[in-house]
Image (tube, rainbow, N blue to C red; front, side, top):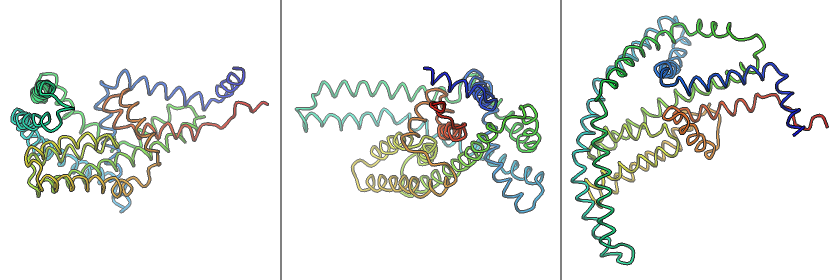
Length: 353
């Protein structure tokens, strides 16, 4: 205990360590207790990170930054309009169609399940199969109805959507336009002896920027490849499933495993155990393999490598702590922890001995 006490005193005697600790605690408290209220700001910062990378490339071509900001911002607004008025209605329509087909899917699934007692009488009884079917029918029907009814219903959801539609473009524009001014203003508020915090921030800033931009392009590429593949093979609800596959890359390892279920289930109920079903599954596995072994190393070559076990632990921990945002930022938060461990002043507990 005396050695630990001496180590703690050494750390508290370092003003840079004290400042970094206080900054991390304040940031944690703000996210935990004010994260919902500041969600538009957090989303705007994420999008600004994404767009700032494009602006930097345009500035490198010796274009004025103000012109680059306007060009990128207008392109983003056009993309946003296409998503809101082109993609979302299609997704909503296909989602309602999937929910409408749940009863017929359950009927086909029931027929397939009822063959199990005949094939494996020692493992399954008719009563067990009936109970499984009853439970699945109730759960899937209730889930489907709740998804459709709650997706765009309710005054609170509409108000929240309007807030995002109005505030997001404004916040994103000013984060891009006044980036230098905001950074300088923040720097003026910090104490002069903050080299440790600056070192950690520079590393984390680079990692988060690379991660957000890489994830954005990974989502688009995986989404497009999945949509083209599903459409060419004639899979129903191609756009909805392709979007799910694209968004699944936000959750490393676990996302791909989860989204495989609806893809395989819908393909099975459309074709059954046929060559079309096998072709679809093989093509889907090829997309996942190319994403993990080719696309991810290409897009995230500048991101600090973290062991897969550490990534899964980070996803589970930060996802349980911060919800969806924790899942999305699991890798950046893991790099924050790693950056702090690397930058932290090296001192051993037994230095005095």
